[in-house]
Length: 107
Length: 474
Image (cartoon, rainbow over all chains, first blue to last red; front, side, top):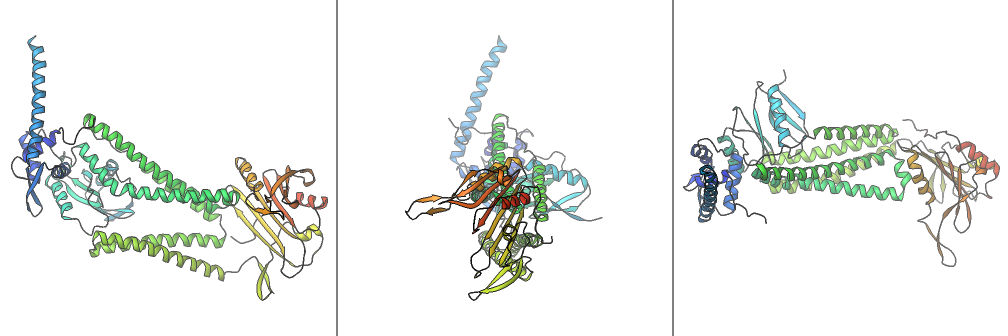
């Protein structure tokens, strides 16, 4: 059965949405994500531009202000819900990992 | 030392890997891309250096945009923020460069990148290639119909063969490019979903250049086989065609510089293409006809009046004439020959017919076909055996019938094989085979069937390997 779009998020999608918990300019996201992840995750400018457009089309974010070429966005309730769902999915994965891997170590 | 250069560049639209590698090599040699023109890429001199290039696609851009839109400028500012400097663009294709040692790539998600490339491809590459494929298949269809209608005549003409070659290559190229794209996309999507990797595109530039070289070589071969008049036509047609393309491209570029909107530019470009095509065709036809009319016709001997009309009389040298066959010469004939030659077939067509108003008498018509490849011989013979299959006749009783060649004894003709035409009755038209030569000869209005002496004459003249050439200077 084909997966719905954004049913699961990639790491880059996850962190872009996380940055938009508060109003943020699109370009600043490129600096915040590596700062947030200690350089582990980077988002290319082209990828960021396209994902912001897709998130906006899906109603996951909305534009808050435009200052020249600088546009700011923020999560919508739908975006928050999708982010929460992804967080839950990661938690379940983490719990399953700890349950299986730690159990074997105790043995 | 020159400060700029123009390089004829041929890349597939979505071959971002190949373009990046080429630009990096040029930078190492001290050349930086400055602008992308229609057929060439312009480079300016820089200090040789290691640069990283990124080729991306912005689907919302158009070749008709007078300037980048605000959104496109924002896209470029995003890239600039992460250290990528804009270099050049060509419609949806955007090229950036970075001096950093390990810059964060502009595209970091292969799936998002593939979606983007596909949106750009659907807008430009696919529609134009599909249109070209449609044109190629349509022309191949017309040539196919022409082959079915006149197989030997079509193959005896290098111009026809050149056209068939070009349209076949174009169709093969378009099918190859379109299927290559979808195959690459399928592999790339699979890899992106499996392990997040990006499948690089394969460079097929060598194939493109080989095809271009083949077409140019075939064109030179075709032109060199033409008569002097036809060489002029071939060269003029190439000049007019290139001139028309140049005019339209310059007009589009002028509209962009002047600031015409994308929609207006596209609409006026289409109108200009139609107008220039019609104008160039009319101009070309006028130029050819008026020039050819001024040139002397090598075939014309003199002219005479018949019923108030001036009729030209031709005086070509023919290898076999009515006078030779009958031993009589009353001089009231027009003799005309046509020689066609291609890499596959030589064809010599001769007509000797009586002048109008000179009373009844014999006329002679024959076609000599030399087939250069044994594999084509049977098809050419079948073409001539079916010469009258499409000419329906009706007898006095209303019965419909067609002319048919029936086998006859070839021995009197000194031939390998022989047929005689039968319509209502046996006629004095024959089909003879001498080795790889087919002779179709019509003794029109001869008072009796060909005598043995006449058959011997035919065998002597056509039964050897003598070539029949045009007497026009090349």
